[in-house]
Picture 1 (tube, one colour):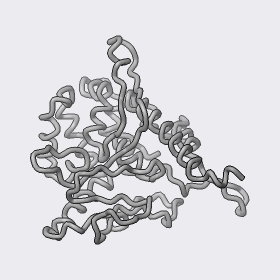
Picture 2 (cartoon, rainbow, N blue to C red; picture 1 turned 30 degrees about the vertical axis):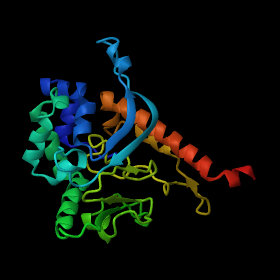
Picture 3 (cartoon, one colour; picture 1 turned 90 degrees about the vertical axis):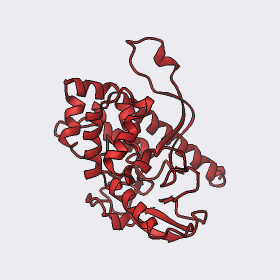
Length: 289
């Protein structure tokens, strides 16, 4: 885990009024700044039964992450990744004007926005994707593809540059693509669900935990083995347990995440269960043997 940036770390640990307000509403701060939306039915009833009870994140049905079109439709306000292609000050004011964000501090929002705009690799990428699409103003068959290249050496922890994760491709996005890619449309009114096994699944939503845009778990991760002739797949549960393990020499933003930490745990466990069920459904012939 990367050491969190000091402005963010001071909010996780601080006892100032802004820090306490951040810790109380951390899940909403994250939702406002996330690139993807949380597609799930959240049960809020349990949190209204007592003002002093611990926060509980409970969901019904399937949980997924979704990314929408690059530009909002006419008459609708920009949200999620769409905010990253606007002027930062305009995007900030757009967020603060919404009733759902009335409990958030504009000063804290500005601080968090500056951190992500400067350090999260996909903040720059979405702005560049927007600028690329503007080069084709009359061509609706041009889309942007976010490439998560499985051939890149995962033992190297240097974050890839924008040129390594984005490409302009022809077509309307309906053609077959690799499951490791995310297709961004200028307008199409549809939400694209990101696979639970995608390396960007966590970092595009939990931006306060992963402010650099680090890769998360994906299908190609292998466990280290002393014998070169053996390879063992690293399961999603094992990966998350490894990330949650406290270490004296490492600061874990996850373990300081308050209500957002609970949401992250439910999300990771649910996505692992969904991956397991998907595998069972897709491999019935092999399992029957």
